[in-house]
Image (cartoon, rainbow, N blue to C red; front, side, top):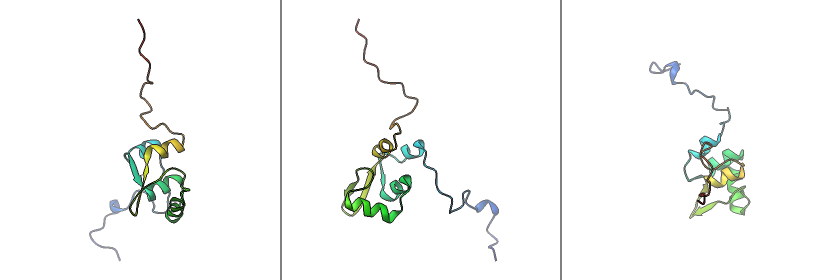
Length: 99
């Protein structure tokens, strides 16, 4: 029996079993670092596999450990996936011209 307060628009837009798509933009939007669970999802790893790999030092990228917490640099994730770390539309750096 459904609640009278529920509306069809309250449904999630994506089924819970559908995998999340990680684009370069979404990864960059995570900021300078992310948690191990999110990094695991980006690499297609389970949470438990990610923690096991991190504890052994075998995670696909370097992991920072702060006490019992793990953080993963987003730039390292992008580099491992061969994605540019910055804006794709940024002009390349050019050396100054000698006159």
